[in-house]
Image 1: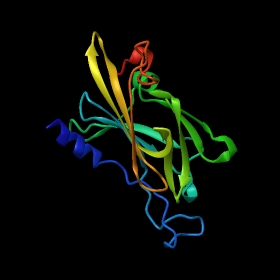
Image 2: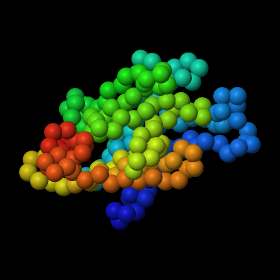
Image 3: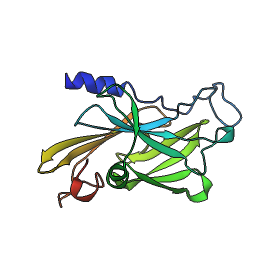
Length: 197
């Protein structure tokens, strides 16, 4: 049953822009003729089917919004699918992020509270917003982070987390599993000592 739910959730992942093959119909800027989905990636947990979805915010001309190029909200899939904003604690310790302009003016660097040691490069690629991150030592378009938690004491702790994405040039799926560090805290996940609300 759990694998069926996870498969269903994986099908909800956003379409990923992949470099168009040589000779295909592209615009002058290298963009394929497509409608861009605002969703970039999501964070799911083993606790329930609810997920935090990260979406691009665009301004006039389809460019990323300078005042806030990224937003995050809960998709309450374990309930009726309604959406909710993140609360203060979630923003501060688990699912929030900071944004700063990327060097050279190519988009933004997004640092997730849940994974501070691996910034996400938010930029326009192929005419669509894209979230690029290193997965298993390779550049990838980030689709999903899935966090397996284990209940110990008052707060759940991170047992492991999977990063899931695709190679932007080939469309090949890239995955990496990250385990907690030797000090009991995961390598960047979930705030202090691996706690995840």
